[in-house]
Length: 276
Length: 334
Image (cartoon, rainbow over all chains, first blue to last red; front, side, top):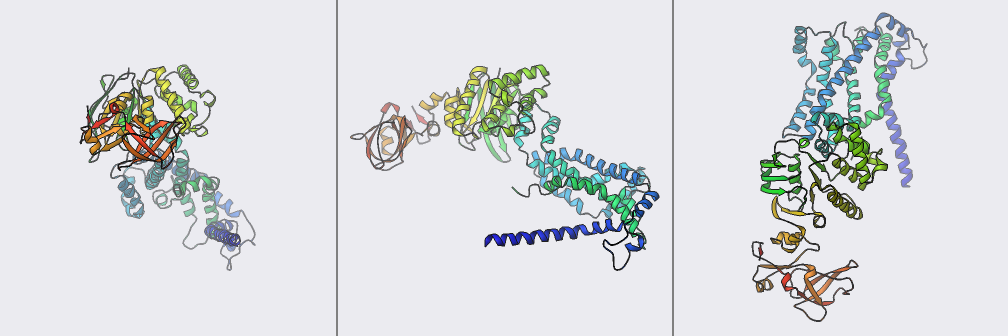
């Protein structure tokens, strides 16, 4: 009896999980499907799901009209650069918070996170002006710095929770073994935290890749990443749904593939410390 | 060389002073054991010597040189931790090589020392394994190997055997003692287990609440404990104490006598008592007896052949010259 109830539960849970999963994935699926439709089919009412004339025309038009490679390269540089720079700054920060905490460490952590609660547009004006003065507007460096700063609290938080799990005695052993602080972090802490650092890297690449507010506001032609590439196909009248969808698909494909192959790492990173 | 001197050393965590001003000298080549109950400050004291904690005031000198402000890495000491603290991502070989790598010792010399340490510690077959693939005893040996290759002026051991099972603990205890015999290097060893202290030490430092109660050789502490705390802490099973009129007869507030210093008889003796529990260890038997006139349960150590069962009546007589006398403040009366 108990067993049959458990099985029933299992089926219901599985079905519910699939339903929620599909619901969340549906907009992406719809975008991908739309990218293979003609503009007329894309806006047809009632909408067609699969029974349409599949075409690659949108992709060839998009490739012809814009320099996808350049946008892609900018995205890689900006997302990768800001994440790596963030990690380099966050490792020592998280080290000090995890292993030599002060009375105010928890407050600092919360304060860092609170910066994420401020609407970004609140500081757009000063940052915009600073970048104009410094001649950094529409440069990749500017975006690397801004996105690094935006995501730094998350990077520090994630690394902090990972580092907290590493026994302090091992670092003390390294100190007794003659390691300097730099050697202790480089040879002992970092290798031990590789899984944590990897999931932090992944999550932040995704966040930086998808970031649209700063990338759209601080770039024009030179440093524009894939978010700007998508935006260039949106129009208030919504006349080019199919092409917009093709551009979106091309923009999200790299990160989608990366995410797909590193699911395990990501899930373990996001649920780290949830159990045990 | 490996003389360690603590001069008026104190340690406070916030407003709490865990080590009041303390002086201690550990001589070169000596095996010194810090022993005391949990929370007595023995590990803190070791960490102060190691440099892993900063002293609040006072000075620490190693080989006559002031090391108070010297970072742990530069003190020339090696430490073995309770949790072994091996680097889990490195092989045994790399774990042992790590301190030499930090000291930039050339590869040939590194290999030579690794081979020698591995041979001495029976680790030769495990050099390419990771710590996760080793047993507790093997891990502890790797930790010791990592300490040996540094050729430190002193070894610091922080309860190194408390994670091992009983049989292994005895074996490792012997190995560490043999290591000390062979290397003749200063060793400072922290334990809460007074058996470890008695069996390994040249010198025992008994601590309570950060204060040194007594310093001396194991037998000095056993035969002439300077106060009631040391008398009760050193020796297993612990010393029996008696207060009141029996103590007054000896001109003391309390008297103490060890379980082996009670003569037992089934016919006559000074005190009549009833047997509670009998622990048969084979060679010896420990009897826990309840004196007829009340008071604490007493422990008597008798020959393994002595048969006594729960509820049996026995008579006890302490050996007069083995009685320890203590004043009301706990200090020994000579």
